[in-house]
Image (cartoon, rainbow, N blue to C red; front, top):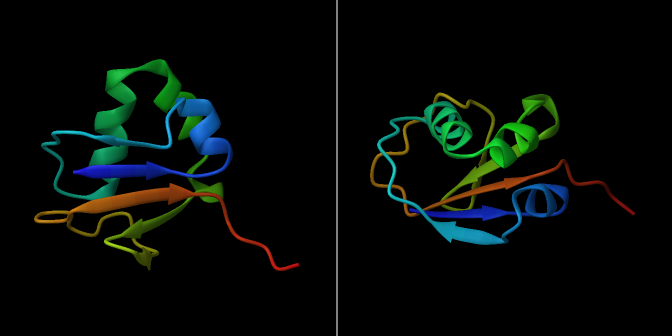
Amino acid sequence: MKILYFSWLREKIGVPEEEVEVKSETVNDLIKELIKIDQKYALAFEDLKVIRVAVDQKVIQDLNISINNVKEVAFFPPMTGG
């Protein structure tokens, strides 16, 4: 699965994207799985209220959505107008 990181999430994790073999069933499980890999993920995902998620380029609200057969998950901060 391709995982994309934008803005300060990319800075904390250190890469803009990565291909990861995951066993997770949901986005929430994916976050927990990533946190177990390295401390940098724990720092990036410490406050999920300030992180938005897109699954196959569709923004989701529920982190318990299934990611079975998903090709891409993106994590990004809330967007602001300007």
